[in-house]
Length: 291
Image 1 (cartoon, helix red, strand yellow):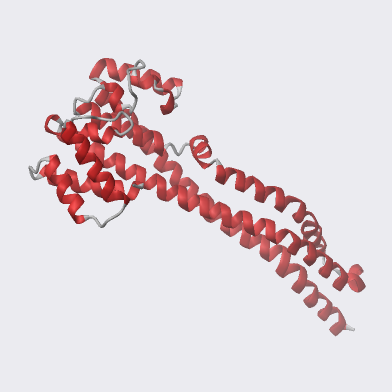
Image 2: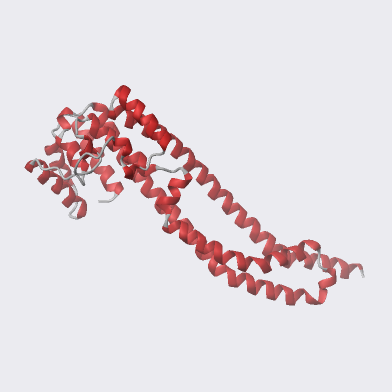
């Protein structure tokens, strides 16, 4: 079940719970409405675990369903928001990976094209070398250097694409952590034991020290203080809210940066292709007409 499918199931179950439909019956209705496939099998697996009363620590979602009757209303809101953030992270990751792959392919494939362009342009303008505009001479020098830059840059983008999860953390787009914190907040508010809420078999210490969360020292300190004052659920909710605000701001910045990058590529194309070929033509035509 991918993030978008999980979001659909969670939203539906949450809406049915809001109307007073028990979780087991809600899952039955969802399973009946789904077409045959992996998602339907997953929902049926949740039903089986609920009937047996066995909660696998690897799937905290079942623990949430098991404690649905004791769950606070805001717990279901956090559960839905966790699924929404997971779907957003999946869409963002897919879009960024596609853009990086296309850009890397353009750079690697365009490198020999730039080399050919430089050779053709140099040979074409050789008879008029003493009358070429300074702008064209500079542009041809840039074109000569571009093949040596484009290939390493293309492979660098492929490396970033392959390690996007780590790169997104470095960029401050910590949607995976926000998703886990929202889910933990929902489960904690439902009375689920901390280790099951974290998806581990046994307690390993305070939740904010859980290694997969990869919280910074400042985030751990804040989480520790909020936990002592208001409890696990409130602390995880508050911390995830702040991290989500920061992540969404970074996403907007990345979108603007990608747009600016597209404009920059267009300017480079005009500078290195259009100007070198057409500017000298007008200059030479003017000089010949004057003669």
